[in-house]
Image 1 (spheres, rainbow, N blue to C red):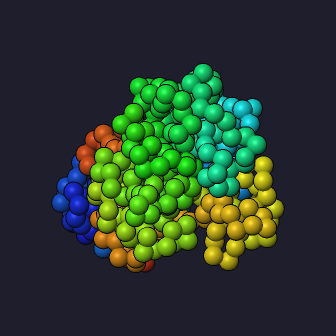
Image 2 (cartoon, helix red, strand yellow):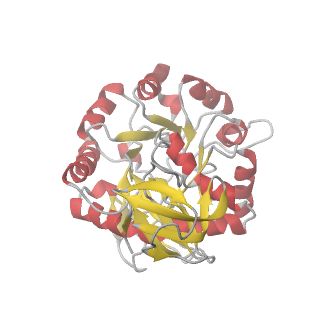
Image 3 (cartoon, helix red, strand yellow):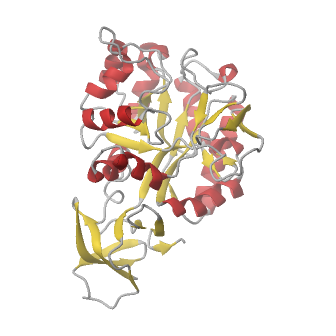
Length: 378
């Protein structure tokens, strides 16, 4: 298949180009009209597919549900917002629930699916801090354990690529070391760690920070906390939920200004309620949640934020409207997560030899078409 546009994002700029896609891969980038075109997108923007490393679910499905058809439906439909790769994200729960969820992801990967690619699993919890648990169920929070994590990784058939944990509870940084040495990204989150403790965790192998500003020690001029660490450590990746609700848009803009251009990662932290009608009965980690008019999901009857209903393309729009340059925001949901996960040889940018993950964007950020490994999904 050959597609073209007068605005194709290549090496940090829009240029007129054709993409020749074959067997799920971009075989060639060339000037317009060199080859017969299957789809001419005019002056619409062609950008790399979006990668969401922190997303629990959508369309009524949650990763913890362990339902293969629910997971397949999610993967098939999520390209409508330009997403071509995800890390299905667990939420803290009892071992039997988490084991079943991991086995389900592995089963779907083994048996096949269509749509956005499963790039691994984000294991959020259960190794969290009780005071900064947020909406994570307290009854299931546990102490970090290498032995238990290995059991979870076995259930996932090695698919856990990213873990959120509170490093202050990781005795001798044993689990941090194990994950570092086995290629699992350790992300600090839901943590009461001080700036100094967080800095030590980075020295021990932590590589990222989960939803910066949320679920962590705040910034104070005498106690910088984990927020201070996230904003000042140039070698540390950091997630930002780009809905303008989890963090004020000014705070999100500050995050992008402080983080090195290649270390910011935009995420949705979306829940099963995304794309569901209001008023339904929904749960997260066995606890009831409800969606407000602002689009935030909260634990029912409380002000505790549980997650978002943010579409990825609208996060991109919201961050640019907040004053973040387009190239910075786009990198944060394409090449940056790809590099963080060690997948940049085939993901994150439009280049010959990489997967044909392409999003066709209108100027209002509506998604016209998404190609997942060369297949049109809309």
